[in-house]
Amino acid sequence: MKKVKVTEVKAVFGYVRVSTLAQVTDGFSIETQKALISDYVKKIGLTGGITWVEDQAVSASKFSTRKRAGFKTILANAKRGDYVIAARLDRIFRSVGDAAICLETLKRDGITLCTTDKGSITGGDAAANLSLNVLTSVAQFESDLRSQRIREVKNYMAENLLWIGGRRKRGFSSATIGKKKFTVALLAENKVLQFIAKIKNQRESKLTVGRSRLSYESGVTVKQVEKSLVEFAKKNGIAGVEKKFSRSTIYRLLKKDDGQNVTARLKIIKDSEKRILRVDGKFVLAKDGAKTSRRITAIEGGLPGEGKQLSLLSGFRDKQEKVKVVSTRIR
Image (cartoon, rainbow, N blue to C red; front, side, top):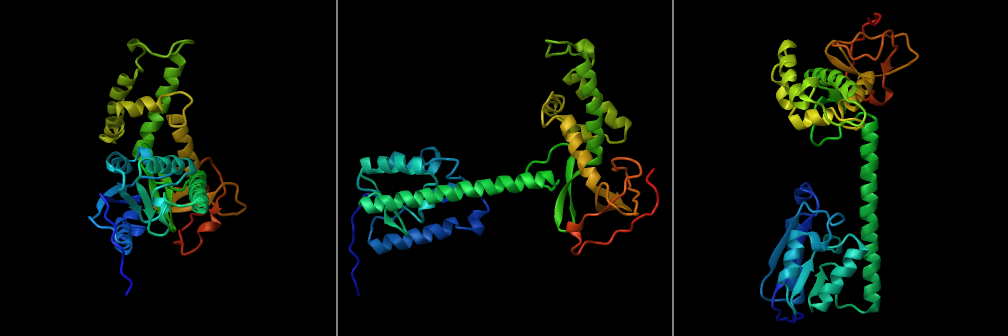
């Protein structure tokens, strides 16, 4: 049996990173990385134990090694002769620039960087350095490509009124139709948005050229809108919903030329109502201008206009619940 050469070192830092919280359990987890590093340390005969350093839910493409709390700890504490070991190269770097700066720093300070799959990174010859640059470039390419795919998917979902997730905006909710989750209007909050839209028009008519603020006498300052919203909610039987609209949210909704203001949100709701209707208490997917004799009466409104012809969206026929269609004209 081949005897492993024992190497005395001052310290061994085991660096582990996951980019998302889901990856902690579903992907290349912390535990998996630690197991690989522990086996590698035994394989090359390092002694003295391992000091574990973690960066959880930190993206290497967004945060360089110098901006991550965990790796900054290593750079601050590692000394000449120490080892830094990661499970894979992409756990440390996701860009060529970050790799070049970090490696230069470690080499200058006499710190050895290793990965369990590539071995020593800082102690290589010219061919090893070339291989490292190629691998880092590939890692950066994969990261950029993944980001591009995510942007494309989110844009597609937004254009098709699919629920993207994240923090819910006031006025919106979600509904599962078929096997997909769509963005729909939350009725009580939608009424509030329509009320704020009327006030927004009043505010803009009272704002003179060159002025950005309204006087208290105008009756439509943000503080006054907040108070009038309470009265509106009580009058319309939706008391309590006004508490979800903070002063900062009201201010944002009243802003001009903003993709987050009340006008933009009501447009999204209107677009969703053109495609997602409710018949007999159930959701139906539809599209305008369809060549069909079927007509639909929707519960609680939601149709873009009178006499529109509608048909089920073909993309959701698989296992979709059949919904009764009322063959009467829209009123």
